Image (cartoon, rainbow, N blue to C red; front, side):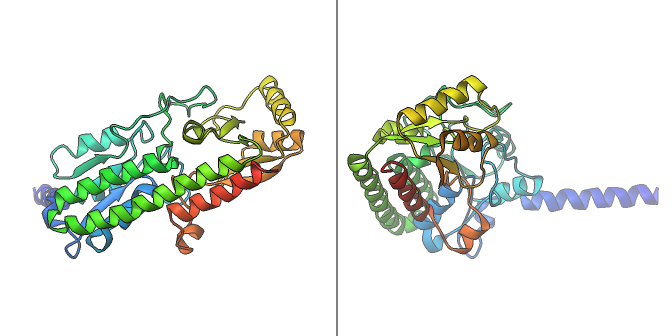
Length: 309
């Protein structure tokens, strides 16, 4: 009986501790700041820039994580439940979000789908879906500067709703951010206007929004997740296309160099350049204090080389 009583006491204590972790957002502000958790890096970056000193922001993705397959730990689920705001990309990128929303039904956490209401593209035929995580829509919304600006606006609106006393600061910070998006949009337009070619050979069909907005046509070696390799017939067709269009560079993702893309590089006698999809970043990038705009500048430089060779 004593053992049972002791066990019951431990369970009761654990229950009270966990329930304490899930208290209302008003009680979980850190030093008067709103606690915000996001999925992909750009959303965390935008939130920091808009919220400034009034937010404490963290992405739940570890450095270098695969945004298509990531699943939050139980510890992260508890942290999200303690937050004031949870921001996710949407557009079918994060398959775990339904589980998060179910777990937060009784919590006072403001949930922001940053892609809600945006004109999303359909996933292209070149986009091979990860097994079990198929995309009907292209989720890489943040790579389009003008759509990213709308995502930032959704974040700003959520912060204003929660902290109306800081509306002026949030609006001012958002307007400064909007100017950066507009400048980035113009840089893409200038790049395409003066480029020798609008076609690029890529190892991941993640850049459909650039094609839709600016006319940068991606010739994809693999699909969205690189889970399914092209057949020998497809490889031959890609190699023929690269040679026919005089493509001298293949654009790999920063974090990975798929074996099939290496084969194409060798067969077509192309050189390697790298594009950053920015959904997650490396520890090295974090230490260098790189943000969405510095990484997009690096992408522009790679495109500049590839499109003018």
